[in-house]
Length: 261
Image 1 (cartoon, rainbow, N blue to C red):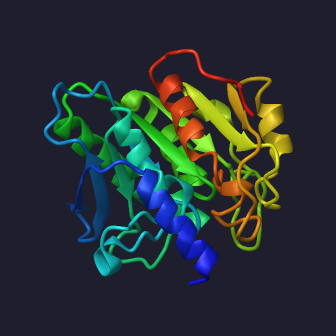
Image 2 (image 1 turned 90 degrees about the vertical axis):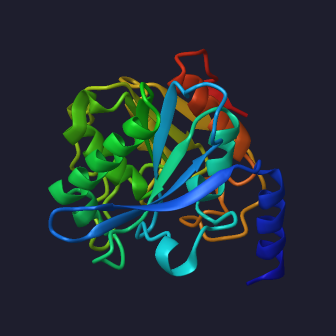
């Protein structure tokens, strides 16, 4: 691991508050299991009003069963999960199912994936009675959050899409053929104005702002990875805390900044 990246991960670990974490698994009728990482302050003083399911980018493989709990992880949502917990939002970070090495877009768009997400929504509702469940996806995780959000309807409280992959690339469709009107619950877009990834340019997010709320992110630390990788504007490098703050305010129905500069 490059020294700069190792130092950056150490700094990120230092700013993410400590909280209880546990790897759990959900079993499906066809025999596969879906691992997820539950991050929460347990026990809490009062039941949380909101909980969230987080969708990793890339192939979606967090590696919980092979590598254990990430400390803190590289993907924006993986390394920032403690920031949600510190703001009173317990989160479940979903991993690839046991019978797959990863989740290409074709799988993220599938009914089986939506069924697994529905089972996790139910598990979170049982864990945190009365909590409203939000789906939050980043990069290719936005495909999971969008398609599952459309499939689950009002079983979830809302969907937040960050660094959305609007464009198709290689063998992945992204959200190029998706109609966002299929999501019938509140929908939020978050996007960095300087996102340099060809699959997730800022322009389509800005156009969606004509219909849906958009949080535009600016600034941050100089990139130490490629434009489609997490240590760049695509992963909100150096802007993690204000981005999470803004998403949480939106979830809570509170005023939130439309521009983070």
